[in-house]
Image (tube, one colour):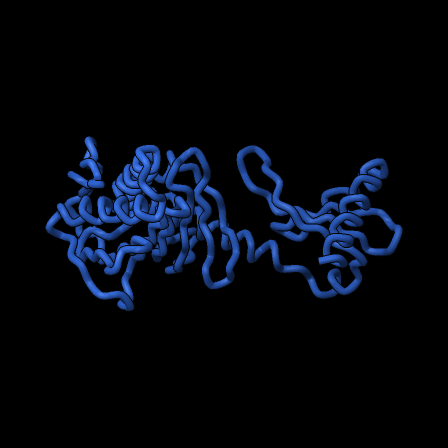
Length: 263
C-alpha cells in the first residue's frame, strides 16, 4: 500500500531567518539513516516545521491502519513519508549513524514523541551560561513539552506548544528562562549548614506568587515542634505554619514515607 502525499507539505518554506542556524541530525526511529542539515538545524528554524511534518506522518499511521494496514508497516511507511518531506529541501542529505551533531532531533512515530537535544546560550544578571537541554513532548499535540537538564537528569520546566512556536523562542525566551530556573534552583539548594544540621524535617516547594515562581522551605527544627516558613531565595524566615495545617502536612509526610519504605 502506498502512502498518499500530505496535502500541506509542512516542510516547505521552513526557513524563518536568513541567518544560518547550525547543523542538525534528525533520527526517525526505524529509518536506517540520519537526515542531516548543515545550515538549518537550529530549533528556532527547524522545530516547528519538523513537529508539523511528524504530526502529519503520525496521522498517516492511523489512516493506514484504518484501511487495514498492519501497524508495523504503517509506521515504516509513515517514517519514509517524513524522510521524503525533509529531503525535498536541498539542505538535507542522508548520513550514517553515530556522528555527533550540534542539534539532535529524534522522532518516534510509534511512541508519538519528539525529542530535541540542543545547547542554549543566555545572559541573565551578568551571568553568562552555555548549557545543554532536552525538550520532549507528544507529537499528537494538546500537551506540554518538558525541558530537561540531561546532565542532572532533572526537569527544568514545562512549556506549552504555542510558546515553542513563537519566533526565536528557543534562543531568546527559553534560554533565559532556563538560566533563571537554574539560578533559582542553585539558590534554593543553598541551606546554611548550621540551620540544616539543626533541622528535624524539611520540605521544599515552588509556589507561584504574582506570576513568579518562589522557592519556599517548610522547616521543623525539633521533633513535634512548629514549622518555620522560609523564603528560599534569601534563606529568610517569613512566618510559622498554622497549627491546624500541621495535621494534613504530617499525613502527606507519612504517605511519602510509606511509599519509600515499600518501594
